[in-house]
Amino acid sequence: MRMYDIIMKKRNGAELTEEEIQYFIEGYTKGEVPDYQVSALMMAIFFRKMTQRETLSLTMAMAHSGDMLDLSAIHGVKVDKHSTGGVGDKTSLALAPMVAACGIPVAKMSGRGLGHTGGTIDKLESFPGFSTALTRQRFIDNVNRIGIAIMGQTADLAPADKKLYALRDVTATVDNMSLIASSIMSKKLAAGADAIVLDVKTGSGAFMKAEADARALAEEMVQIGRNAGRKTYAVISDMDQPLGLAVGNALEVKEAVATLRGEGPEDFMELCLTLGSLMLIAGGKTDSAEEARQMLKGVIADGSALNRLAVFVEAQGGDRRAVYDTELLPKAEILHPILAPADGFIDHIICDEVGICSLLLGGGRETLHSGIDLSVGLVLCKKAGDAVRKGDILAVIHANDEKKAQEAQKRYLAACRITQAPPEKRPLIKAIID
Ligand code: URA
Image 1 (cartoon, helix red, strand yellow):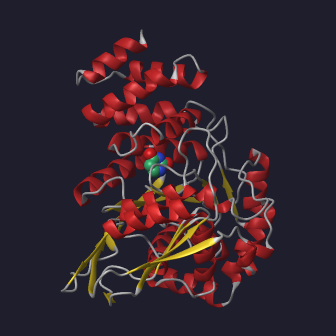
Image 2: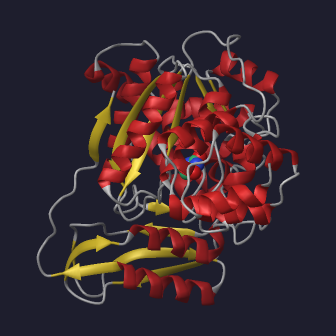
């Protein structure tokens, strides 16, 4: 078999066999197939797409490209959650401690920023000293001891996805249904959780812009999960504007902490309650969504979810004091307000553009090996539907470079549309597939 022929076959629109998919995944994982050939194949898949059969073969080949984690040493039903990626999506940071504080073990594998979206690991690294590079034993011990552990993808867990994820991030090949489904589900299957709750985003800030595509992705992933014997649920949620108000690594951590204090934005809280209820139901805590919501609200009201975040941060080497004093998180030097150019209503904010503003400020990677500035980003003051007067602050840019702040402002203003009539309200939760 030759990689060249596989690229050519897909480029010409034919269906790849299971053996061909396995050949390229094995070769890439071992370092025998170079990045440039895999980049070409990713681009061919992007344009030619994959059938359901190919997607399933790709998922299984990636899941088995390394070890399959055995979490049977963890007591109880282990629940994992994964988002398809969005702007301002800091859900795991608040949700994992909420669910753990309710008594359901959260054993989670997370990723870094991808395309215009941020990643949980980058965000968590805003806590000085925090590390997701846990040994398997420590991961299991932490879940048993404190009910929660988040690890990054190690060299031996779905390593094919680890390499492909980083490669897709810098080759404009992220937003393809089969590549997203196989990337997410291979990790989830390899990471060993018994139940998986998927947050599938749709709208201008999501990889799947159209709701029908998001639904197809959700259904495909739920099917893959169930075929592999895992309880799998999906929520389709709106990503047509940033979730909450903060976009950028440390800024999002600050907002997640505020949410655990009961002071977070309404949309973000609602999403946490919806996903959290499914996680409690999947974990066997209750079968009533209403009771689950009350439990989740209870652990916020009594402070136990916030305390669980502090214990978790400390258990992974981070400075727990930053949970109680967010001034200790990385802070940008320049605060640059963006002012409304006219009276009216915010009709919409092109969401992926807001993610790109954060990247332009230094919050995302430019190449495979570049670093990121954890302190930069934006905090929105107005969201879709809000009335504005000329000169009101639309958002505040947090930057460390005046030129980049100017560039982000220009881009933000172009992305934010002000009209004379208020827009129709878009529901946050579009569907639940259970
Ligand atoms: N999240 C992932 O883990 N992979 C993708 O491809 C997209 C979102």
